[in-house]
Amino acid sequence: MFTTTELLEKINAHLVGLKFARQPQGLYEPVSYVLSLGGKRIRPVLMLMAYNLYRDDVERILATATGIEVYHNYTLLHDDVMDKADMRRGKPTVHKVWNENTAILSGDAMLVLAYQFMSQCDSAYLKEVLDLFSLTALEICEGQQMDMDFETRKDVTEAEYLEMIRLKTSVLLAGSLKIGAVLAGATAEDARCLYDFGVNLGIVFQLKDDLLDVYGNPDVFGKNIGGDILCNKKTYLLIKAYEQADENQRRALDAWIDAETYEPKEKIGAVTALYDEIGVKGLCENLMGEYLSKARAALQAVDVQPERKRFLEELMDKLTVRQS
View (cartoon, rainbow, N blue to C red):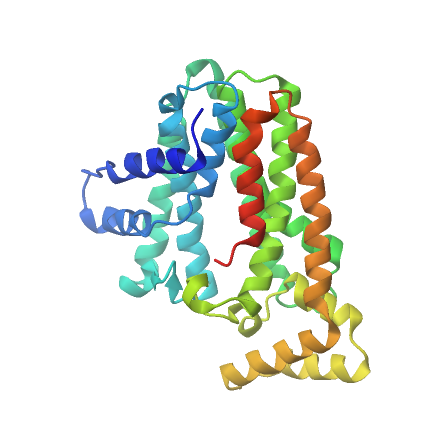
């Protein structure tokens, strides 16, 4: 059985070996660039880890794992354009190095490439894998649209937000795990439990991301702090701030959300101060704990020897205390 580090090394080596020989290079250079930025490779590693619960020949699914990573990075190219983000993993985003049109088109090419890699899986599981991958990709679009719709609303509920992040973030983690299990020949019940594990872990992951965007160290986080505040993004922190605020705090939040001109640092500082007054950081951490418990229960229900689940448990713990 392989450690998380060993699986990460395998997928990184596979990605480094990718060569996009097709023309024009102007389409593929941004693809190589974004894949070269590194990252945790959480999704392909989770796929390999789920497969490795049952089988040790993980090299058989490196192409499929590559497909999930290429797909994830495709979504980042488009997200960065929509969010007007300047930095990704400590480096300039694709639309800053090139331009927005290039980022969109190269992202489109990455979606096609992702399907090509995904279709290299064992033909016995091809339909099930592609059906799940397609549903996951569609759900991520639905989650992104919900996120965009929330930008113009001040009445987003906690339940709506949790559904949005389930779609936008969690289903790709869950789908990665389930595809790995399916390709390893796991039972339907185990595949379902691993999917549930991924959904709950993904919600914890996104809630942690919400916290880090406000309270993280930009040198460690890899992107500027306060981006969600400047975009008026309806994170869990902002939603709970509105829900828990008194009249004066709500009025102050409204003023910053409605402001058309402002000094970015001042807005970030003022909204963060309101979060501190209202106590939303603690509320977020408590909710993370609830979903972490659900993730642990789902993983515990997977019918393999506890020792084989050790690395998934360690990764789960690492993701919840991460600072980047």
